[in-house]
Length: 409
Ligand SMILES: C[S@@+](CC[C@H](N)C(=O)[O-])C[C@H]1O[C@@H](n2cnc3c(N)ncnc32)[C@H](O)[C@@H]1O
Image (cartoon, rainbow, N blue to C red):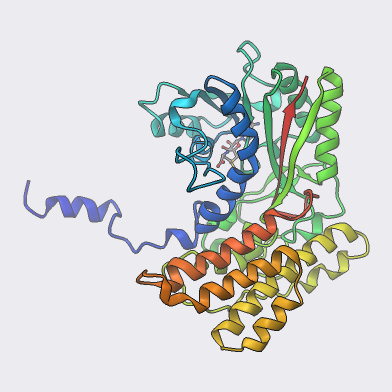
Protein backbone atom coordinates (compact mmCIF):
# COMPACT_ATOMS: atom_id res chain seq x y z
CA UNK A 1 0.00 0.00 0.00
CA UNK A 2 1.35 3.41 -0.95
CA UNK A 3 1.83 5.80 1.93
CA UNK A 4 -1.12 8.01 1.04
CA UNK A 5 -3.46 5.28 -0.09
CA UNK A 6 -5.16 5.05 3.28
CA UNK A 7 -5.97 8.75 3.14
CA UNK A 8 -7.34 8.41 -0.39
CA UNK A 9 -9.78 5.78 0.84
CA UNK A 10 -10.66 7.80 3.94
CA UNK A 11 -11.38 11.01 2.03
CA UNK A 12 -13.40 9.17 -0.61
CA UNK A 13 -15.44 7.57 2.16
CA UNK A 14 -16.44 11.01 3.35
CA UNK A 15 -14.48 11.05 6.62
CA UNK A 16 -12.94 14.41 5.76
CA UNK A 17 -16.13 16.35 5.04
CA UNK A 18 -17.05 19.38 7.14
CA UNK A 19 -18.67 18.20 10.36
CA UNK A 20 -22.09 19.80 10.82
CA UNK A 21 -24.12 16.79 11.87
CA UNK A 22 -25.31 18.38 15.12
CA UNK A 23 -26.98 21.25 13.28
CA UNK A 24 -29.28 19.24 11.04
CA UNK A 25 -30.22 15.70 10.05
CA UNK A 26 -31.76 12.79 11.84
CA UNK A 27 -29.50 12.78 14.88
CA UNK A 28 -29.14 16.53 15.33
CA UNK A 29 -28.35 18.13 18.69
CA UNK A 30 -32.01 18.57 19.62
CA UNK A 31 -32.59 14.86 19.09
CA UNK A 32 -29.50 13.89 21.10
CA UNK A 33 -29.57 16.37 23.96
CA UNK A 34 -33.23 17.40 24.19
CA UNK A 35 -35.48 14.64 22.86
CA UNK A 36 -33.44 11.56 23.85
CA UNK A 37 -32.85 13.08 27.30
CA UNK A 38 -36.53 13.91 27.69
CA UNK A 39 -37.50 10.30 26.92
CA UNK A 40 -34.85 8.90 29.25
CA UNK A 41 -35.93 11.10 32.13
CA UNK A 42 -39.60 10.33 31.49
CA UNK A 43 -39.06 6.56 31.80
CA UNK A 44 -36.36 6.71 34.47
CA UNK A 45 -38.39 6.24 37.61
CA UNK A 46 -40.39 3.30 36.20
CA UNK A 47 -37.23 1.63 34.87
CA UNK A 48 -35.41 2.19 38.18
CA UNK A 49 -38.23 0.38 39.99
CA UNK A 50 -38.02 -2.54 37.56
CA UNK A 51 -34.24 -2.81 37.83
CA UNK A 52 -34.54 -2.88 41.62
CA UNK A 53 -37.19 -5.59 41.65
CA UNK A 54 -36.12 -7.95 38.84
CA UNK A 55 -33.17 -10.06 37.88
CA UNK A 56 -32.45 -8.36 34.59
CA UNK A 57 -34.94 -6.91 32.15
CA UNK A 58 -36.74 -8.33 29.15
CA UNK A 59 -37.46 -5.51 26.73
CA UNK A 60 -39.37 -5.42 23.46
CA UNK A 61 -39.12 -2.32 21.25
CA UNK A 62 -42.16 -1.79 19.03
CA UNK A 63 -41.24 -0.12 15.74
CA UNK A 64 -37.62 -0.27 16.84
CA UNK A 65 -36.02 1.06 13.66
CA UNK A 66 -32.40 -0.05 13.86
CA UNK A 67 -32.41 -0.39 17.64
CA UNK A 68 -32.39 3.22 18.85
CA UNK A 69 -34.34 2.07 21.93
CA UNK A 70 -31.39 -0.02 23.10
CA UNK A 71 -29.18 3.05 23.16
CA UNK A 72 -31.91 5.13 24.82
CA UNK A 73 -32.50 2.64 27.60
CA UNK A 74 -28.86 1.85 28.33
CA UNK A 75 -27.96 5.54 28.72
CA UNK A 76 -30.52 6.73 31.24
CA UNK A 77 -28.61 9.04 33.57
CA UNK A 78 -29.13 8.44 37.29
CA UNK A 79 -31.20 11.05 39.12
CA UNK A 80 -28.33 11.78 41.56
CA UNK A 81 -25.32 11.83 39.25
CA UNK A 82 -22.63 12.33 41.87
CA UNK A 83 -24.09 10.03 44.49
CA UNK A 84 -24.76 7.12 42.18
CA UNK A 85 -22.15 4.40 41.82
CA UNK A 86 -23.58 3.25 38.46
CA UNK A 87 -23.07 5.50 35.44
CA UNK A 88 -26.49 4.61 34.03
CA UNK A 89 -29.76 3.33 35.47
CA UNK A 90 -29.62 0.11 33.43
CA UNK A 91 -26.29 -1.55 32.71
CA UNK A 92 -26.04 -3.52 29.48
CA UNK A 93 -25.50 -6.72 31.45
CA UNK A 94 -28.85 -6.12 33.17
CA UNK A 95 -30.68 -6.51 29.86
CA UNK A 96 -31.57 -10.17 29.49
CA UNK A 97 -33.29 -9.61 26.17
CA UNK A 98 -33.78 -6.59 23.94
CA UNK A 99 -35.94 -7.51 20.98
CA UNK A 100 -36.54 -4.95 18.25
CA UNK A 101 -39.66 -5.41 16.09
CA UNK A 102 -39.98 -3.46 12.87
CA UNK A 103 -41.88 -3.77 9.61
CA UNK A 104 -38.90 -2.64 7.55
CA UNK A 105 -36.44 -5.33 6.41
CA UNK A 106 -33.79 -2.62 5.96
CA UNK A 107 -34.19 -1.41 9.56
CA UNK A 108 -34.05 -4.95 10.90
CA UNK A 109 -30.88 -5.67 8.87
CA UNK A 110 -29.29 -2.42 10.09
CA UNK A 111 -30.26 -3.24 13.68
CA UNK A 112 -28.63 -6.67 13.41
CA UNK A 113 -25.50 -5.06 11.98
CA UNK A 114 -25.43 -2.38 14.70
CA UNK A 115 -25.64 -4.89 17.51
CA UNK A 116 -23.86 -7.92 16.11
CA UNK A 117 -21.84 -9.56 18.85
CA UNK A 118 -24.45 -8.77 21.50
CA UNK A 119 -26.23 -12.09 22.12
CA UNK A 120 -28.97 -10.45 24.19
CA UNK A 121 -30.05 -8.19 21.29
CA UNK A 122 -32.40 -9.58 18.61
CA UNK A 123 -34.51 -8.14 15.83
CA UNK A 124 -37.56 -9.47 14.05
CA UNK A 125 -39.53 -8.27 11.06
CA UNK A 126 -43.25 -7.89 11.76
CA UNK A 127 -46.19 -5.62 11.04
CA UNK A 128 -47.64 -4.39 14.33
CA UNK A 129 -50.90 -3.41 12.64
CA UNK A 130 -51.50 -7.15 12.35
CA UNK A 131 -51.08 -7.58 16.09
CA UNK A 132 -48.41 -8.36 18.70
CA UNK A 133 -46.05 -10.88 17.13
CA UNK A 134 -44.57 -12.35 20.33
CA UNK A 135 -47.64 -13.79 22.05
CA UNK A 136 -45.83 -17.09 22.57
CA UNK A 137 -42.99 -15.51 24.58
CA UNK A 138 -43.02 -14.99 28.36
CA UNK A 139 -44.05 -11.46 29.45
CA UNK A 140 -41.62 -8.63 28.87
CA UNK A 141 -40.81 -6.15 31.64
CA UNK A 142 -40.75 -3.22 29.24
CA UNK A 143 -42.88 -2.83 26.10
CA UNK A 144 -41.08 0.19 24.70
CA UNK A 145 -41.68 2.46 21.73
CA UNK A 146 -40.06 5.74 20.75
CA UNK A 147 -40.20 8.47 18.14
CA UNK A 148 -43.80 7.98 17.07
CA UNK A 149 -43.56 4.43 15.67
CA UNK A 150 -46.98 3.68 17.18
CA UNK A 151 -48.52 6.54 15.19
CA UNK A 152 -48.14 4.28 12.16
CA UNK A 153 -51.12 2.35 13.52
CA UNK A 154 -54.69 3.59 13.24
CA UNK A 155 -56.64 4.33 16.40
CA UNK A 156 -58.34 0.94 16.11
CA UNK A 157 -54.99 -0.73 15.41
CA UNK A 158 -53.37 0.82 18.47
CA UNK A 159 -56.29 -0.15 20.70
CA UNK A 160 -56.10 -3.73 19.43
CA UNK A 161 -52.33 -3.85 19.93
CA UNK A 162 -52.69 -2.33 23.42
CA UNK A 163 -55.22 -5.01 24.36
CA UNK A 164 -52.77 -7.69 23.26
CA UNK A 165 -49.85 -6.05 25.06
CA UNK A 166 -51.80 -5.65 28.28
CA UNK A 167 -53.00 -9.25 28.10
CA UNK A 168 -49.41 -10.40 27.54
CA UNK A 169 -47.79 -8.18 30.19
CA UNK A 170 -47.17 -9.37 33.74
CA UNK A 171 -47.77 -7.50 36.98
CA UNK A 172 -45.39 -4.54 37.17
CA UNK A 173 -44.57 -4.50 33.44
CA UNK A 174 -44.56 -1.08 31.80
CA UNK A 175 -45.66 0.04 28.34
CA UNK A 176 -44.12 3.18 26.83
CA UNK A 177 -46.18 4.89 24.13
CA UNK A 178 -44.86 7.63 21.88
CA UNK A 179 -47.13 9.11 19.19
CA UNK A 180 -47.57 12.36 17.25
CA UNK A 181 -49.40 15.11 19.17
CA UNK A 182 -52.30 16.56 17.21
CA UNK A 183 -52.26 20.12 18.55
CA UNK A 184 -48.58 20.78 17.87
CA UNK A 185 -47.80 24.32 16.66
CA UNK A 186 -46.22 22.54 13.68
CA UNK A 187 -49.55 21.58 12.10
CA UNK A 188 -52.39 23.96 13.05
CA UNK A 189 -54.46 22.54 10.17
CA UNK A 190 -54.80 19.24 12.09
CA UNK A 191 -56.03 20.60 15.42
CA UNK A 192 -59.68 20.18 14.41
CA UNK A 193 -59.32 16.56 13.42
CA UNK A 194 -59.51 13.41 15.59
CA UNK A 195 -57.41 10.30 15.99
CA UNK A 196 -60.12 8.36 14.15
CA UNK A 197 -58.61 9.21 10.76
CA UNK A 198 -54.91 9.04 9.89
CA UNK A 199 -53.53 12.19 8.25
CA UNK A 200 -50.58 12.80 5.90
CA UNK A 201 -47.11 13.19 7.39
CA UNK A 202 -43.68 13.60 5.84
CA UNK A 203 -40.06 13.29 6.91
CA UNK A 204 -38.97 15.76 4.24
CA UNK A 205 -37.36 17.89 6.97
CA UNK A 206 -34.36 15.64 6.34
CA UNK A 207 -34.07 16.98 2.78
CA UNK A 208 -32.24 20.15 1.79
CA UNK A 209 -34.56 23.17 1.72
CA UNK A 210 -34.71 23.37 -2.07
CA UNK A 211 -36.03 19.79 -2.24
CA UNK A 212 -38.86 20.36 0.26
CA UNK A 213 -41.47 20.64 -2.47
CA UNK A 214 -44.82 19.46 -1.05
CA UNK A 215 -45.83 18.00 -4.41
CA UNK A 216 -42.69 15.93 -4.93
CA UNK A 217 -41.93 14.69 -1.42
CA UNK A 218 -43.24 11.44 0.12
CA UNK A 219 -46.27 11.67 2.37
CA UNK A 220 -47.62 8.77 4.43
CA UNK A 221 -50.62 8.44 6.76
CA UNK A 222 -50.09 8.54 10.53
CA UNK A 223 -52.38 9.03 13.53
CA UNK A 224 -52.17 12.27 15.52
CA UNK A 225 -53.38 12.03 19.12
CA UNK A 226 -54.65 14.24 21.90
CA UNK A 227 -53.65 13.26 25.45
CA UNK A 228 -57.20 12.34 26.36
CA UNK A 229 -57.75 10.23 23.25
CA UNK A 230 -54.58 8.26 23.88
CA UNK A 231 -55.32 7.68 27.54
CA UNK A 232 -58.95 6.72 26.86
CA UNK A 233 -57.81 4.25 24.20
CA UNK A 234 -55.32 2.63 26.57
CA UNK A 235 -57.86 2.52 29.41
CA UNK A 236 -60.45 0.87 27.14
CA UNK A 237 -57.86 -1.77 26.26
CA UNK A 238 -57.18 -2.32 29.97
CA UNK A 239 -60.89 -2.79 30.69
CA UNK A 240 -61.09 -5.31 27.84
CA UNK A 241 -58.33 -7.39 29.42
CA UNK A 242 -59.50 -7.00 33.00
CA UNK A 243 -56.10 -5.54 33.97
CA UNK A 244 -55.64 -2.59 36.32
CA UNK A 245 -53.20 0.02 35.09
CA UNK A 246 -51.64 3.27 36.28
CA UNK A 247 -50.72 6.00 33.83
CA UNK A 248 -47.40 7.07 35.36
CA UNK A 249 -46.40 9.72 32.81
CA UNK A 250 -48.20 11.67 30.09
CA UNK A 251 -46.04 14.36 28.55
CA UNK A 252 -45.84 16.67 25.56
CA UNK A 253 -42.38 16.58 23.98
CA UNK A 254 -40.88 19.08 21.54
CA UNK A 255 -43.62 21.70 21.86
CA UNK A 256 -41.61 24.44 20.14
CA UNK A 257 -38.70 22.47 18.69
CA UNK A 258 -40.58 19.87 16.62
CA UNK A 259 -38.96 19.14 13.28
CA UNK A 260 -41.68 20.91 11.32
CA UNK A 261 -41.36 24.22 13.17
CA UNK A 262 -38.56 24.88 10.69
CA UNK A 263 -40.43 23.73 7.57
CA UNK A 264 -43.31 25.33 5.70
CA UNK A 265 -44.92 21.99 4.87
CA UNK A 266 -47.87 22.21 7.30
CA UNK A 267 -48.05 25.97 7.94
CA UNK A 268 -47.07 29.01 5.90
CA UNK A 269 -44.19 30.20 8.12
CA UNK A 270 -40.79 28.56 8.22
CA UNK A 271 -39.50 29.33 11.73
CA UNK A 272 -35.95 28.83 12.94
CA UNK A 273 -36.48 27.35 16.35
CA UNK A 274 -34.99 23.90 16.01
CA UNK A 275 -32.09 25.35 14.07
CA UNK A 276 -31.40 27.87 16.82
CA UNK A 277 -31.61 25.32 19.61
CA UNK A 278 -29.29 23.05 17.64
CA UNK A 279 -26.89 25.99 17.65
CA UNK A 280 -27.17 26.44 21.43
CA UNK A 281 -25.68 22.96 21.76
CA UNK A 282 -23.04 23.60 19.09
CA UNK A 283 -19.39 24.55 19.50
CA UNK A 284 -19.99 27.60 17.32
CA UNK A 285 -22.53 29.19 19.67
CA UNK A 286 -21.69 32.73 20.66
CA UNK A 287 -24.72 33.99 22.57
CA UNK A 288 -26.88 35.51 19.85
CA UNK A 289 -30.65 35.21 20.23
CA UNK A 290 -31.57 35.67 16.60
CA UNK A 291 -34.61 33.59 15.64
CA UNK A 292 -35.28 32.68 19.26
CA UNK A 293 -38.41 34.86 19.51
CA UNK A 294 -40.61 33.25 16.85
CA UNK A 295 -43.79 34.88 15.67
CA UNK A 296 -46.42 32.33 16.62
CA UNK A 297 -49.39 34.66 16.06
CA UNK A 298 -50.55 32.26 13.33
CA UNK A 299 -51.91 30.12 16.20
CA UNK A 300 -54.25 32.88 17.41
CA UNK A 301 -57.05 31.66 15.20
CA UNK A 302 -57.03 28.34 17.11
CA UNK A 303 -57.50 30.08 20.44
CA UNK A 304 -61.25 29.91 20.59
CA UNK A 305 -61.76 26.36 19.47
CA UNK A 306 -58.79 24.89 21.29
CA UNK A 307 -58.35 26.99 24.42
CA UNK A 308 -56.44 24.31 26.36
CA UNK A 309 -53.83 23.63 23.68
CA UNK A 310 -53.48 27.33 22.91
CA UNK A 311 -53.09 28.26 26.59
CA UNK A 312 -50.55 25.50 27.22
CA UNK A 313 -48.42 26.44 24.24
CA UNK A 314 -48.53 30.13 25.11
CA UNK A 315 -47.73 29.64 28.77
CA UNK A 316 -44.64 27.71 27.69
CA UNK A 317 -43.90 30.28 25.00
CA UNK A 318 -43.91 33.07 27.61
CA UNK A 319 -41.42 31.11 29.74
CA UNK A 320 -39.27 30.58 26.65
CA UNK A 321 -39.31 34.30 25.89
CA UNK A 322 -38.36 35.14 29.49
CA UNK A 323 -35.27 32.93 29.12
CA UNK A 324 -34.34 34.65 25.87
CA UNK A 325 -34.96 38.10 27.41
CA UNK A 326 -32.68 37.33 30.35
CA UNK A 327 -29.95 36.00 28.08
CA UNK A 328 -30.08 39.07 25.90
CA UNK A 329 -30.19 41.45 28.87
CA UNK A 330 -27.18 39.72 30.44
CA UNK A 331 -25.20 40.18 27.23
CA UNK A 332 -26.16 43.85 27.11
CA UNK A 333 -25.31 44.36 30.79
CA UNK A 334 -28.90 45.49 31.28
CA UNK A 335 -29.04 44.37 34.89
CA UNK A 336 -32.27 46.20 35.61
CA UNK A 337 -33.98 44.16 32.85
CA UNK A 338 -32.50 40.91 34.19
CA UNK A 339 -33.85 41.77 37.65
CA UNK A 340 -37.24 42.78 36.33
CA UNK A 341 -37.71 39.61 34.22
CA UNK A 342 -36.65 37.40 37.13
CA UNK A 343 -38.93 39.22 39.57
CA UNK A 344 -41.92 39.00 37.28
CA UNK A 345 -41.53 35.26 36.72
CA UNK A 346 -42.80 32.57 39.03
CA UNK A 347 -41.60 29.43 40.80
CA UNK A 348 -39.35 27.14 38.81
CA UNK A 349 -38.81 29.66 36.04
CA UNK A 350 -37.38 32.35 38.31
CA UNK A 351 -34.98 29.79 39.82
CA UNK A 352 -33.81 28.76 36.34
CA UNK A 353 -33.33 32.40 35.33
CA UNK A 354 -31.33 33.13 38.49
CA UNK A 355 -29.13 30.15 37.70
CA UNK A 356 -28.50 31.41 34.15
CA UNK A 357 -27.66 34.89 35.48
CA UNK A 358 -25.28 33.36 38.01
CA UNK A 359 -23.56 31.29 35.31
CA UNK A 360 -23.11 34.28 33.05
CA UNK A 361 -21.78 36.50 35.81
CA UNK A 362 -19.42 33.77 36.98
CA UNK A 363 -18.08 32.81 33.56
CA UNK A 364 -14.51 33.28 34.81
CA UNK A 365 -14.96 30.48 37.32
CA UNK A 366 -15.32 27.93 34.51
CA UNK A 367 -11.89 26.85 33.33
CA UNK A 368 -13.16 25.73 29.94
CA UNK A 369 -11.67 27.14 26.80
CA UNK A 370 -15.02 28.13 25.40
CA UNK A 371 -17.60 29.28 27.94
CA UNK A 372 -20.34 30.04 25.40
CA UNK A 373 -20.23 26.72 23.61
CA UNK A 374 -19.37 24.51 26.58
CA UNK A 375 -21.42 26.05 29.37
CA UNK A 376 -23.82 28.87 28.56
CA UNK A 377 -25.40 27.72 25.27
CA UNK A 378 -26.09 24.14 26.46
CA UNK A 379 -27.44 25.41 29.79
CA UNK A 380 -29.88 27.77 28.09
CA UNK A 381 -31.09 24.87 25.93
CA UNK A 382 -31.39 22.59 28.97
CA UNK A 383 -33.43 25.22 30.83
CA UNK A 384 -35.83 25.45 27.86
CA UNK A 385 -36.04 21.65 27.75
CA UNK A 386 -36.59 21.31 31.51
CA UNK A 387 -39.35 23.91 31.45
CA UNK A 388 -41.06 21.83 28.79
CA UNK A 389 -40.52 18.65 30.80
CA UNK A 390 -42.19 20.24 33.82
CA UNK A 391 -45.37 21.28 32.02
CA UNK A 392 -48.56 19.67 33.38
CA UNK A 393 -49.91 16.38 31.94
CA UNK A 394 -49.55 16.13 28.17
CA UNK A 395 -52.52 17.15 26.05
CA UNK A 396 -51.04 16.51 22.61
CA UNK A 397 -49.61 19.98 21.99
CA UNK A 398 -46.07 18.84 21.21
CA UNK A 399 -44.52 17.09 18.23
CA UNK A 400 -44.90 13.96 20.27
CA UNK A 401 -46.99 12.67 23.14
CA UNK A 402 -45.31 10.24 25.50
CA UNK A 403 -47.14 8.02 27.91
CA UNK A 404 -45.81 5.46 30.42
CA UNK A 405 -48.30 2.90 31.68
CA UNK A 406 -47.74 0.32 34.44
CA UNK A 407 -49.72 -2.89 34.75
CA UNK A 408 -50.74 -3.15 38.41
CA UNK A 409 -52.80 -6.35 38.46
C1 LIG B 1 -39.81 7.23 13.09
S1 LIG B 1 -39.20 5.61 13.06
C2 LIG B 1 -38.72 5.38 14.74
C3 LIG B 1 -37.65 4.32 14.88
C4 LIG B 1 -37.05 4.17 16.27
N1 LIG B 1 -38.02 3.70 17.22
C5 LIG B 1 -36.38 5.42 16.77
O1 LIG B 1 -36.52 5.69 17.98
O2 LIG B 1 -35.69 6.10 16.04
C6 LIG B 1 -40.65 4.66 12.89
C7 LIG B 1 -40.39 3.16 12.70
O3 LIG B 1 -41.64 2.46 12.75
C8 LIG B 1 -41.58 1.40 11.81
N2 LIG B 1 -42.95 0.99 11.46
C9 LIG B 1 -43.86 1.69 10.73
N3 LIG B 1 -45.00 1.00 10.61
C10 LIG B 1 -44.84 -0.16 11.29
C11 LIG B 1 -45.66 -1.31 11.53
N4 LIG B 1 -46.90 -1.37 11.04
N5 LIG B 1 -45.14 -2.33 12.24
C12 LIG B 1 -43.88 -2.27 12.71
N6 LIG B 1 -43.06 -1.22 12.54
C13 LIG B 1 -43.52 -0.18 11.84
C14 LIG B 1 -40.79 2.00 10.64
O4 LIG B 1 -40.26 1.01 9.80
C15 LIG B 1 -39.74 2.83 11.38
O5 LIG B 1 -38.57 2.08 11.62
